[in-house]
Image (tube, rainbow, N blue to C red):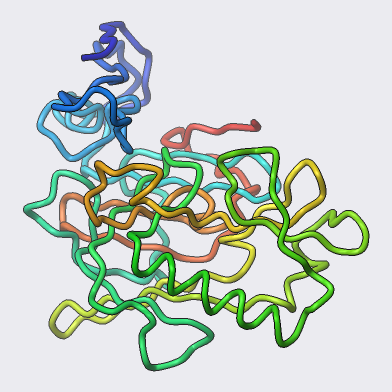
Length: 284
């Protein structure tokens, strides 16, 4: 259930600028059996992989030639969203196959690593979904507890001036305070280590690096908080799936190529807005 709108837009197509009729909307009830359990992924605009998505309509009407979607979220605020492949870099992108059977944008299963260690901290390969509509990143119970354990262990050895504290924002369940208010992640970045997700799809191997600034948040109280949450508690309907949210996609161009069934990412200055008409910009 949701809201659906049909309207006419003036979009720049490959054959000129023509009025285009597009249906789009936002879902707020995805047919859950248990209405007391919040759904972790609601529909946003219609940017999924279905047959009646916004991109499918744009392609069928000649506005774009490829079923490709990309976004770039800047840590400085703002960013951009683009349709079609005009903005896709010709080199430097890390590509991994998307699971063709999955209704979400999923690179399949990956292993979670801490501080470049070859041995994963995840007990088994993790099912992963990319969802820029989620503010935070959600791990299943085991990888979440493993991440929390290694982060706390590192802090206890190297940065004892950070002490755990309860946060007023209930969404942020694990936070630390310093002697003074923490204003930027750079002030405490040395206390944390990078995480990485490694995907191995046959001969194609890909690594998503997750540096501290892609999983930490500075709260309004001046505390540094873990932006990775326990999905088994926050969203039981995830059922063991691990969701990579907006915080982990910061300062990266993320590309969903449904034509080739590939998912890609590359470090990018997302505050540099492209001039192409295929890009929709935001300064929020």
